[in-house]
Length: 515
Image (cartoon, rainbow, N blue to C red; front, side, top):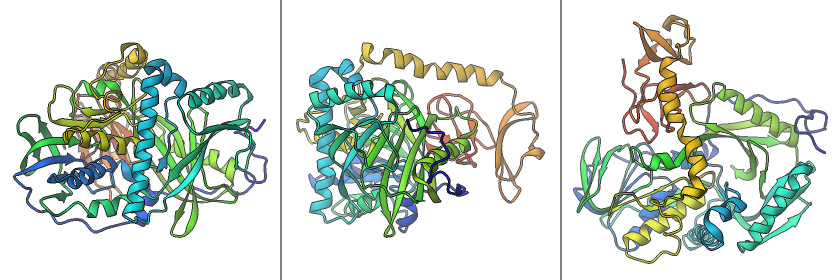
């Protein structure tokens, strides 16, 4: 049996390279585009879409095509948030096992959810074809495999469930990887692409005929009503409907209790091994996922995994090192050109929450995509646009954002939400690091005590120190330092902040206060 810790093979015997210093995704690095001018916002439109990732851009394109005027608002730069840090797998294989979904939702509802994912794959393929988008899109097979004898039985049950649900799946022991595996599920007609090469042409098609795109426009409040009112840091917009496509909705409490936030890590490597163009996932814990990409005409192996809850890993840099060990042992890494991490929102019952928001009549959301944000993000846009346009949607009731599945999600609901009281109280009782401000090295952050109070302190490369109140403005938990991403991360609900306190990831709407 192949050992993940074996160092002896010809691939692992090659010198192990180091990691890049800075985090950067290949999608953002290879496809820059100029910022849009900061224009005055319109007083009113038919639909405001908040967030210009794959959900927001797709929703805006669909709604404009249906004759609606749309204002697409992005707090930072379009396609550079969570979407810009994906690994861009396009697949029907979900993070939650099919066997678990069948027990939670039953066969009919699970089958419809899987069909919805296939519909999102077909929509992406249709945009690529009809708009002639050059985005390295390719249909490829996907392999879900195990390297361990004792896991083959679980894999067999997953195979049986996939066949019950109507997926185009087969059982195989032949997987085109440069190391042996015990068994695998092979799924046909999966796909991969360059996400920004796909999204930027769609983004550029939105302005005109009363529709616009606004970057560097942070939304601080969404009020449901007739009309709805969307408040930004500079102006307000009235709209008949609002789509909140921010990965984590602007919702203070209820929907936040139904998702948990994780960081997932990725490397872009040049490798010695020959790897067939396909999608790959193992069944390890934490699991790993692999694919090929063509970056500037050269093959790049993308390897991801090593997930952990946001704000609850003291050695985030060690996650990159562990991922590099995994990749080098199996593929013989010659050089690591990119490293990056991304936010993943896990739903308590296994499926995302899409559609009309709780206690709202005209506000629509999408969250809980797990690690399949490209497909579920597209499906969220399809459902929101159909509901706004008064069309029937065959998946809206299964993935309803207001649903509560007490039996399906109860155990995970309790397990994930114990973090809030534990960190809310426990972190305040912990002593801060013993170091003083003067002891912080350049490029280092830490919770320290200043004048008897806990503070979040960071010393930049010039030697200047930035001191912030460490209390997350979302629900009052204390943030933790993420050395790998140079950010302050909240362990309760996943908000992340830059070293100057600016919001990087919600649900927080405002940043950490400077001291």
